[in-house]
Structure formats: structure tokens, C-alpha cells
Image 1 (cartoon, rainbow, N blue to C red):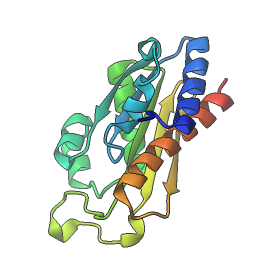
Image 2 (image 1 turned 90 degrees about the vertical axis):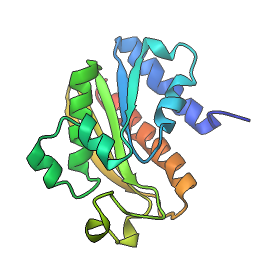
Image 3 (image 1 turned 180 degrees about the vertical axis):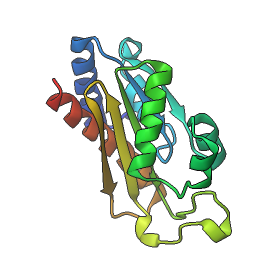
Image 4 (image 1 turned 45 degrees about the horizontal axis):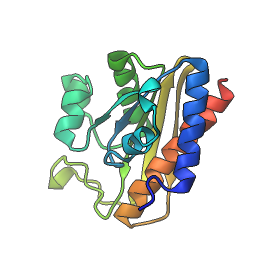
Length: 176
């Protein structure tokens, strides 16, 4: 078994190289990736020199409990978005004290339910394969939305993690 895949290993090595050279650190907030971002990052020997840790906020209950949101924000929650991942990234950056936080949340499929109850679930199948990525760092916050075009859950989880690492690497390169 080859873990992580070679293309991911190359991304992680470059991310680590940039962070280590700058004496910077990284944390991740994960949802739809299910822990793959953290697993990919810690697969590199010596990762503890740049990786502070991660938080997996998968269920609505954990997302709301661990997000630092107030009652009004919880009531108004409608599902993953760029605003949501940026809020998660900002909160984790404060909590962990990392230089950067990469956050993701999305719809790996096949369901697009956000755990709000049947009457409030998102039923738009075009959301399958959509991930929202956010980064909070010393030069501000950045976010983007990526669609994989796939309805395959496992494939989307892996693609979400890869797209997240690619987004982080682009930000690190521009902020160097």
C-alpha cells in the first residue's frame, strides 16, 4: 500500500518545506475529508515540527459545539459555505495558535443533507462533489469553492483533501 499517494506526498513535502523554512505552523479543520488532510500531513516524518494538529467536525452537533458559534449563528446555519469554512479556520487559528489553518467542508455525496432535519436538508444533487476551502493566516483569509464533478463519496473525500493541499500551497507560495 502506498500512502499517501505520490502526488499527495509531493504536495505535503513542498508545504512542509515552506513552513519549516519560515518557522511557521499549520492546523486543519476537516469535515467532508474525514481526517484525510491530517493523515496526509502527518505521514511525513517530522511533521510535528510544522503541524500543530487538526479538528474533525463532521456531524452538525460537533461542528456547532466546537465552532465557537453563538445561538443566532447556529439557528441561521444552512450548510457548508465559504463563510462557514472561514469561521472554522479563524476560530481554530485562535485556539491552536497556528500560523495557518486550512479548513474544509462540503458534500462528498451521495447525500447533501447537512443534518438539520429532513425538512431543512439540502436536496440539490448539484452540490455533490462540492467542497468549500478556507485559509486563515498572517496575511488574512482566503477561500474558494471547488467542484469535482463526481458523485463518488470516497473519490470526493480524496479529491477534497488534494484540492485543499493545492489551495494551501498556492497561498503559501504567494505569501512567501
